[in-house]
Amino acid sequence: MTATTPTFKAGKAWLVAAVVIIAATFAAIVTFRQMTVVPLLTAYFGIDVAEYGNVSAIVSLFTLVGALASGPLQVKIGPRMLMIVCFILFLIGTGLQTVAALGGWGFIPFMGVNIFATIAYGAWMTAPPIVIAAWFPAEKRGLPNSINATWISFGMLIVLTVSQPLVEMGGDNPLAWLNIWYMLIILMIIGLVILILFARMPKPDNDFMEKAADTGEKAKMGDALKNPAVWFLMFMFIAFGFGTAAFGNYFPTYLQAPTEAIVDPATGIVTPGGGFGVDPGTANTWSSWSTYVMIIVGFLWGFVLNAVPNKHYDKLNLFVMIVTCAAGCIMFVLPSAAIVLPFMIFWGFASRLFPPVCFVIVPEVTKNQEEASVAVGAMAVVSNLIGTIATSVCGMIAVGAATWNACLWPNVLVSVIGIVCAVLLMPIYAKKYAAKHSTENVAA
Image (tube, rainbow, N blue to C red):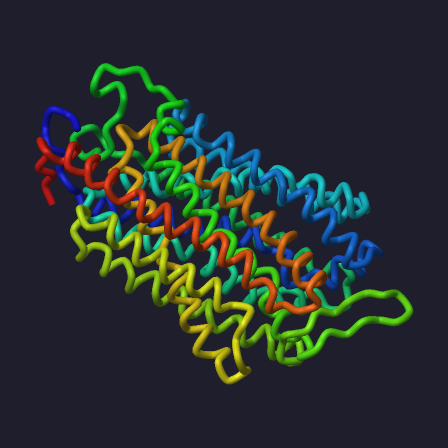
């Protein structure tokens, strides 16, 4: 740390955290804006769902570009400026899509200009944990990180709530869905303004993140990738990200699947079995229950994290990884429809545990803000990549085995990886924590 012990300014710290969390929610809204209006988009552009999915998947790969660039960018311009740049890109992407729709550009150009927002989404998720780590002392980072980890849940809940009323305001206009885009342009402007005005980085006497310059060192981005603790956390993101992507993409489909596989005799297309045969509305309603649990857990889990001394986070991380992996393995092998609601509660709980724990661990196992920024960026890359892989793998396995139950096995594989890495992290964490805090006495 710096020569003088930083002073915790709770009011300023929580103002910045609140602004960042609000902005993150806006970022989630712009990212998931299309999920509720896919039928309207396909009807307007005259395409089928398959074409929509294929083009969307190609564009989504650009999240990797944003994630890859985020670490080096944070080292160069800092996390605050990275957040501002992301919101400028969100605004450009949303504005260009609006122009494309009004100008009749066609579906591929409409989705193509969304690359700006997609890159921003990949980069955005890496900045808030670093800002929080700078403003909050180590033992107080759990709560703001846990609340921030609900940003996607908040955003999706808002999208699900406001989309239909906004579309209905447009009446019979085939472009009525653009009302959502108009709202988003306003939100992106608001987000950009509040980030510029209030999301300041702390001054040196309030900064709890050591910089390379503080010790006379030169920032070396490669140091993060030489750190075994960072690699273990990245592999744990494989276990977390695989289960999360599998749930988000396929759990409602699994619920709607018939109990036995159906093969179309004319086309040979297989509809995997293993599900409960519920209607789409019921499947979506059941799946949404987990969102409310996620938001509640996001707040409550933060208080638990603040109550647990940071020196015990290696053990807490192992517990979290076991719970997370258990939820992923149970997902596609529920014994009856009566278990769905209890599983939704369990999934909502389990899926919110790992990210805030990870983001408290990162500053403890890295030397400085620059190394931490690259580490979080690397984890974002892994998270986005494994999400894409999970979508492909689970779909192929379900069809190949003719049952969604077969998706248990890739979840078991990534679970073993995650739990083993959590165990291997423990001695490294204990050593790094002891070394970092041997001469520190951070004021709480």
